[in-house]
Image: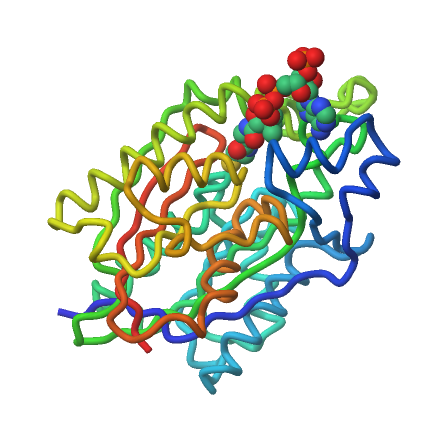
Length: 326
Ligand SMILES: CC(C)(COP(=O)(O)OP(=O)(O)OC[C@H]1O[C@@H](n2cnc3c(N)ncnc32)[C@H](O)[C@@H]1OP(=O)(O)O)[C@@H](O)C(=O)NCCC(=O)NCCS
């Protein structure tokens, strides 16, 4: 049986930095509050006129180049995003054409902040089935396109960025080993974008009422994120008899440093074995996990166990166990 292994990681971060000092000029907040309550110091912001496909293409090209993998041999491209280039067609189609993945099929996957881990699971299963020989899994979000920079409770958190991983089959004991995902639509009321979909299409009224931005009840989301991320990770580790000592790194979605610390503590991971880069990028939604893998890549060695965990709007959440392949 084949297993899917990550064989390369790529990333793209826009050059422009939005610092806490910049936000102090936009809303009533302070560097001290933001750092203490979220752990974030700056985020990256993509320029106007460019969208999620632009960042996805850059991250994808980097991953392929690092591996020397010819784009025309790719079978599948999945882009996880909540900020697609257009409502349709899929961002994945635009990315495939731009990078020269001429024979690949693909689609966008929307599961809020859990998008990347869900997409990685589908890519891994496609490879394990034998039908797909290679897949690019990309998380790309231009969160600045759906953030209200008058709302201090959300604008301090989110940033833009993209990450991509290449999946190839292996018969070694490495790669995506297992996953456990869950979802609960009752969470919609706590974290959503109220307008712009089929129930409330864009209108003068929806724009005037600022309904095309991220709506978030922070405390509710915080509570669920800590409980569910810890529970699903624990259940997955228990299923395979893994303890925190067996795991080289815990790789949590980067939503708030306090959430990361609380989940790590519940699972028994010391912070030096937890991937954290939220201070530099904020919450990049579907890009946080591949950006973590990219930043920590040179600290990983073949055979290392990683537990990825996420929580996002919907609510959606999940955990994935992988063994690093190189
Ligand atoms: C949003 C979040 C940072 C707010 O932090 P918090 O500690 O929960 O703060 P609260 O919402 O309880 O608000 C506490 C006070 O700080 C204020 N506040 C909120 N944002 C602020 C800001 N940027 N600067 C200063 N004060 C702020 C609130 O208005 C509130 O004031 P009040 O007590 O006078 O009403 C936090 O709830 C969070 O990170 N939630 C999860 C978000 C998340 O994970 N989202 C993505 C899911 S994938």
